Image (cartoon, rainbow over all chains, first blue to last red):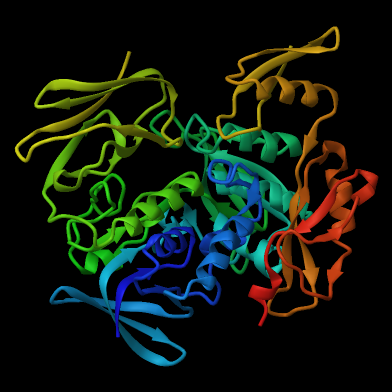
Length: 409
Length: 120
């Protein structure tokens, strides 16, 4: 049988994408783990769904609303514990190969939605001298131990990186009885949300050290201590500032990277800034009928946006005119999604998602077509960790030069 | 003036607040919810608690739970002591209460992962 759509990944993006496909079209949802929900399964803290449901839900509760709906849909077939090993384009369709308990399987789909999320940057991807013993782990791994396995992976730890997962884990480990010596951030400003600094660190008297990083790990079988150094404004360690902190674990929370080996195997054009595919306003990549959504497309800070973006892909599937793509340029942003405008399928307004490349107290976003300003919006307090979304009435012709400019005002 | 960060929404406004004649005088808030937060934070701070409790099921050694509402901030660690003694021996659905009125605070503890879907 041939599916209308194959969705790879059963986390928040894949669940929302599968649900948004018309109910008379067949969908295959492929998940490598034995449960749906993706990373939300272990994100037991609250704050999810404030935008979408106007409620402060925990991660598993947010996921459960989508999972319940997916399981009730007769047009969606779910295959758990299937790991995609190969994708080939055959004519107008895609052939997906998976390994599973039932052996090697293959499935044919007309549309393909990549919803396979992102990965944490590992301790091996950060330059730290010394050994790599047991006790060195990412914040997500620590979260899995504590929240899903019910095991405490440390009694006294150092956390490197002030991303939100690191802050959340500082609180979680403290609640479960571990001592968090401190959260160390090489940059001069914290990466996580201010409210998490307050409710995860300050509430529990956990110190936050800025412009300091871990430079060396000691220990053979198990982490025994780490060396901390102050860094200058170019993040280079300053000689003579070494201090030693005894601990049995070093937990790193140093960023997330979209997972795109499968998309790359189809030679889909990627964006160096997002580390995800280039897409048009319907989240379709340069390859017709192939979509990228959620954290595989770019790392989001709110799951509510992940669901929303993923629904755009499913809703418009098989309803589009032959595409005509125009590139969108940007200046002054960390990145902008979509990076292409499909002018053959424009609606009244188009949603754009962007991050500023620096903290901007007062900023202005301008849209120029062929050098002429057609839209302008003022912003205050833009920060790279906080994604902005804007709906703009935009239309353009094939030869137009579309440029977004974000600048101080 | 006391400095604090509002935790109501992801904006995380940096507030300065004090109580004058029983009312909160607040600076730095982008919305009205900041005033209510600051007043509560200065008089009777509250926090939600999210954690896990043990179960008898080996496929799911712990299940996620949370407070339905918020506890007085100083009772959070006491609530952890109560919850760490629990071992669930039956399955619960999302939203079902496992402890009602924990520590006489009027706040219930609810399950946040569907144990029926997770355990075969």
